[in-house]
Image: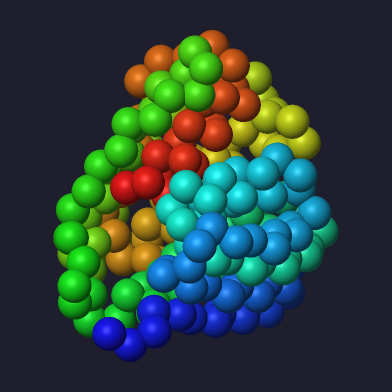
Amino acid sequence: MTERKATVTRETAETNVRVELNIDGSGQFEITTGIRMFDHLLTQLAQHGVFDIKISASGPDQHHVVEDVAISLGKAFNQALGEKQGITRMAHAVVPMDEALAAVVVDIGGRGYSIVAAAFNETNIGDMDADLVRHFLVSFASEARINLNARVLSGINDHHKAEALFKALGRA
């Protein structure tokens, strides 16, 4: 099997993003976006997906940084998967994080579509706008060209709900 790696660079008026991905990694990561909570969530994706991910991103506002990282990471996954030979096309994971429970189902069939049902109690999760969790997942699915159904099934703490979603995405 060929190496399943990709590097994507995205430079716009709003951001500078570089993503390096090795799907057949060991969960290693180097992630710097300037948004501590987002870095934490992306770390969960790398560790629980057992992907090696390097992300460097900068920009003046969170919305564009999160969106452009999602676009770049989605493109990297799509490129690294190539012809998608030797993989299981559909998968799911249900992940607890203390009192929270999240489920993610993916179909790597080449069509980007997403449904995200994740209600948060507060406007922010740490230093990150809570709605950017949804926006990341939608943008990622579109560029990765996967069907993504992500749901927070229960939970009280917004941090735990978001972290369970990213862990479940990695596992799925």
